[in-house]
Image 1 (cartoon, rainbow, N blue to C red):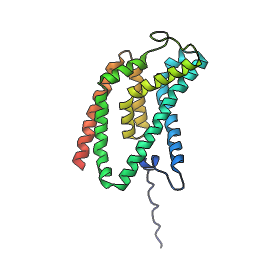
Image 2 (tube, helix red, strand yellow):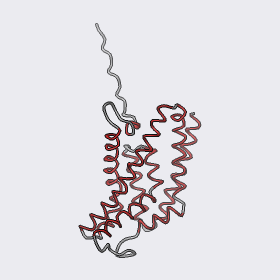
Image 3 (spheres, rainbow, N blue to C red):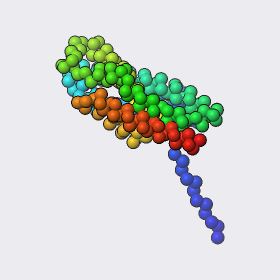
Image 4 (cartoon, one colour):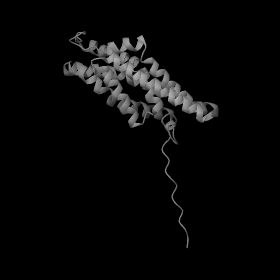
Length: 220
């Protein structure tokens, strides 16, 4: 009686496939796929904290503010893809780089947590928390609405630098990581004591970074 072989177990798609072209795919196509995924993800993650601000504008101006805001995040995604592709290629060609990834990931989380306590973070978070009608005037025309959205996007990118780094380390496609980072961003943006929330997130991140780094060193 002929025994049947068990089918091979399915392997999860490795994270580096986000950064490297697959069979028959060009670099331009890979970059476009990543940026499209990144833009959609940023809309989902940032809207909870951005929606109260956009709600205060009229429809047309609010749309332009939102468009300017997300254009900034899209450009950031393109820059992140270039960096991620370079690191993925280096890890494939140099085993030492691949072996350093776990320790480096822990250090990134640790530094991202420390970033939450800096004056730079506090300044840009305060700019993100300003609302038209309270501390800011409404944009008077289309051009001002667009520029305001771009400025808001820049402040948000700067403020979220640490949390964005944590997301990239935890896994861009990890839904749990997205949910955690989205909750942290929304809380520090909308909670009455946003700076305290940011520092609390920083403390948790520093602790997690220490644990991840220690575990990576122990297993190395």
